[in-house]
Image (cartoon, rainbow, N blue to C red):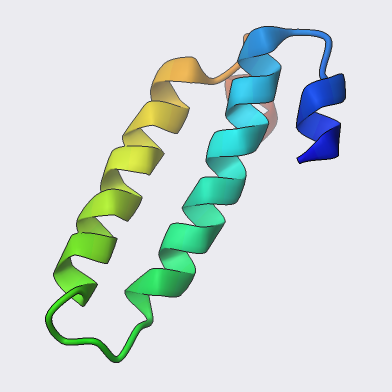
Length: 64
């Protein structure tokens, strides 16, 4: 999380945090907990949508 605090642009910081959260959510989706895996996957989808909304300018070009 330290690198996120050093990001000069707040939107870049938000993008870094959300990217780490997405990675954690993907790990949770591989859970063996049948009662929660659906919620984990829903969470992953919500985080992915947020990443698309707050992607820093130029990040879309880098992803393409």
